[in-house]
Amino acid sequence: MRRPIVAGNWKMHGSRVENARLIEALTAQFPAESAAQCVVCPPVVYLSDVGRLLRDTPIELGAQSVCAEAQGAYTGEVSAAMLKDVGCTFVIVGHSERRSLYGEDNVLVARKFAAVQSKSLIPIFCVGEQLAERESGQTNDVIARQLDAALELCGAGAFANAVVAYEPVWAIGTGRVATPDQAQEVHAFIRGRIAARDAKIAAEVRILYGGSVKAGNAAELFAMADVDGGLIGGASLKAEEFLAILAATRR
Image 1 (spheres, rainbow, N blue to C red):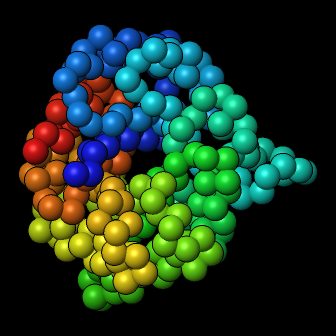
Image 2: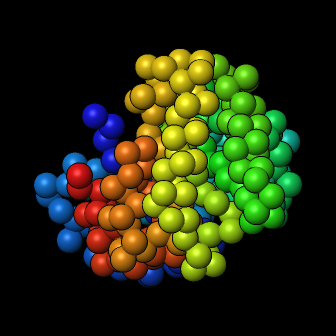
């Protein structure tokens, strides 16, 4: 049985005051009986602060990106070792905004995936297609290329300690959401792509859906056989909404 997971990507939002209020609200209301794993990913400048606030709570700390290099003259970058040092257990790699706005290609994302795992952190490996790619029937081809870059660099075994997140780019922050059937179809494709190399690992890897997930649509999405939780954007900034999404992982 795959343990559900809900990860909140705060993107470039927050302040010390706002973050403290949000974590206080989340931890005060966090369901003691929750079987799901919960992660929050604040901006890098707040990782240490939020990590301290999360100490002795069930909520884990994640980062939104990482440098593919271990150390050196890379001004403005942050290494996997640094993220581990401040208490992270998860790192998002390959988010569509990193791919589209900052030119991160499949090869670089695969290297970041490897860098995260080299420090025993868990990558949340994002894949997904643009609207034009979906409309032209290229969804599976796009996702196959994204997945294969990591599979070829690291091997299927690496996915035993990784999470995959399917985020259709056309549904991120747009209010549009893939239907449960559309999400399930792509999640099944992802699992099958990994299964072609290692069926056991494919059966165990957790695959999240990301793209305008809210309390009102989470249960229907999470009810799909291959949807193991969500990578949540804007809704993760509202404690009640985020906790309602977490509760929707119950099967």
